[in-house]
Length: 265
Image (cartoon, rainbow, N blue to C red; front, side, top):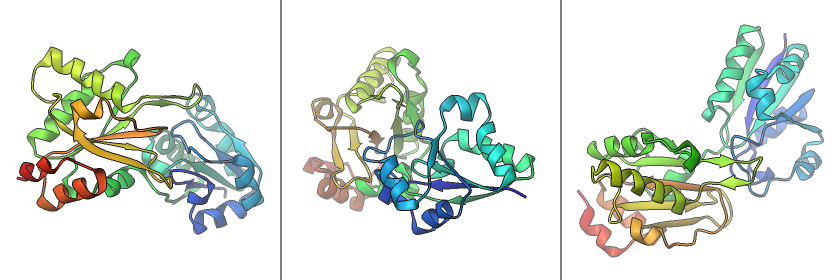
């Protein structure tokens, strides 16, 4: 019986893989990697191949989604195959679909987890993980949707924080910036007029989580629109009700204005 192991690569470079994940790679007959669902800013395939002693085969979005991962599954039916994934393996629904198909074919599947932007963003900001509501992806302007605005609004009404993942297109080296995301939300606000996203709303911008030089900045939207976060990838958080410790964390870790202390509820 074959085997397919999903291995997380973490958030930044080839050193983000766990020792367990590296062991799985070294003992596999075939090693695949997808690098379109997220970006690893400093990942080097040649360096990884040197570390692992394995040749990597890049699988495209077309191969995994349109062709249902047939190239990967074919090798997994014959022996042990590893699929390397940015971040934590099953955050993307693409990988869940592949795992389901593998199980249907009688291919054993396992997961070696990696660092995720979900936990990294929460940790960098100092906001309590149990106070986050539904997360949402903010798409590029050509795919403009009111869903992110509505999700943020619902979470705020419940006093919960919202993690916003910003759209990327790795093939085109295109990344939705924090400024662009905020401007789109403000445009929806101009239509909806619910008071969800205004220039006075507190937000947290994060760039390059998991790298040696992440940038974390908490401020009001009007200030974040002018802030230079540097290189991608980017993440955005809209805090809900703040615990006093969260307020102190935003000031200490994210340079939030001192007035945040008065926003504690």
